[in-house]
Length: 199
Image (cartoon, rainbow, N blue to C red; front, top):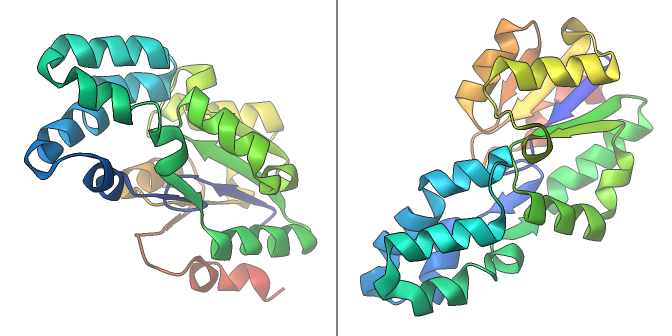
């Protein structure tokens, strides 16, 4: 194996939207606000890069105008409160780089969120390339986004490992010849990738 491809959310980035909503929204409103912002069509469109953050906010307000105060309060700050680095897995990125692997990112991510963490987190300097959904308008598990990564960086899928928390995304990678490693929340990445650290 020569290449290791990482997802971001729940792999290198801790993502706890439920905790975020619980922290900032009154209990009786939590479920409907969670569904509106984090499970609605706007979230996927932000990942795909087909709407802006402002357009998403306007859409939320049209759908739930009675909750304008809550929505306007929490939507801007999810940029800072919803994400944190997974330090243990990030350390592993540095270790794998030292061992000579080529490292890549393949992730569904909002533009504003990605630009924030790329600027603030030094780990992104360790990667040889990245494909982020919002810039290319494809989403995992669509085949096109995987093929774009392979073509852009001349990656041989059969020489590659892909780590993702979504089994659906892993299954597509496997169909394309990549060794897919599913990483459910709370499982240790170091154990999953131990075979790469033994060489």
